[in-house]
Amino acid sequence: MASIASIQLGAAQLTAAFLFGGTLLYSSSFAAFLFKTLPPDEAGALLRRAFESFYLWLIATASVAAVLLVNIDLIACAVLAVVALSTVPLRQQLMPAINRASDAEDRKQFNRLHMLSVVAGLTQIAAMAYVLLRVF
Image (cartoon, rainbow, N blue to C red):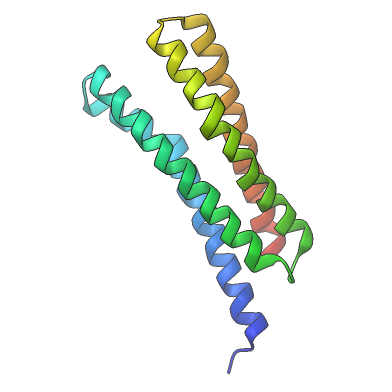
């Protein structure tokens, strides 16, 4: 019979892997898929709506994984807590600013803000990979 600690570790590992895989898939292929299959206006509108849900999912999943790791690995827990907390301003501030720049057709501002979101996303993915390497 598995101990509570081993079940908790397994749940933490699965949740962290789900977070990493889901974020990697969404970030690397979802937008490209939309823009290849839909007209640009439709793809952009759908992407805006999808990012709101994606960021909520990322916050929730990173938070759950962090809680599961709290008494297993405090460093991994803290890293995932930072991922969850850092997603809040991305969702609440950066994405609306990107949308405003896009609506205003301010390509320079859009490109700058979009690059910031890409760097933030890649940093979060690297942090998730670090956690996976620690807990597996």
